[in-house]
Length: 260
Figure 1 (cartoon, rainbow, N blue to C red):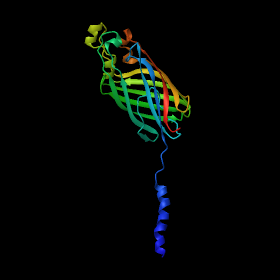
Figure 2 (cartoon, rainbow, N blue to C red; figure 1 turned 90 degrees about the vertical axis):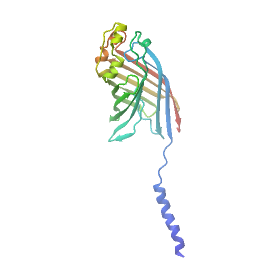
Figure 3 (cartoon, one colour; figure 1 turned 90 degrees about the horizontal axis):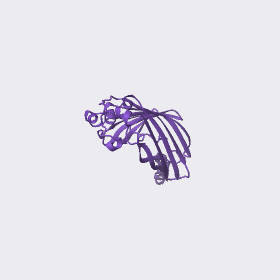
């Protein structure tokens, strides 16, 4: 009669093993969305400012704090972590430029959608460095990049403050689209023809602040200042009708969806 107990014994042995092999249940996902207005130059080098959307989405699981994202960085998310260095896609855009934006009949630049990638790492728990490279597939059609470093102070998700320097770089195609003066531009505006090369476009500083007002609702604000240098700063358009000073700022409300 012992054979009747063999299947039961095997089942009793298999059940704990199966329980151990079963994947652990993942913690619930939380999503935080920021939405509000931001003020920035109408186009690179422009003196006048214009309003646009300040939008950001972050995700985290369980009670894990949301990962730090600088408010001025491109949209993207890590997809690979190699030895503490994270890599992922980066998407950016710049609005179009018309003659009305500059006040003089310069050539127009279409809406620029930029696609590329980023790499980032933490030198310490409170200091992150990041590099981005993107190429526009419309509009200015050039390559742009940014090097940044941020000092981060935070209390979990309750509040977060960050501040750090920025270095913007771009190729000659980008610089000629935004800062160049073609022969036709020169004839129409009286400005000297100008054909800039690539290099450092601007040096800047950015700061951001996040605070939860309730478990669901919070606020976000940022301010950034860039100062044009190199060939961008020497553009006859910037020197006569634009400005080397390029400030921007944004303010948004946030709402967190998911378990709390």
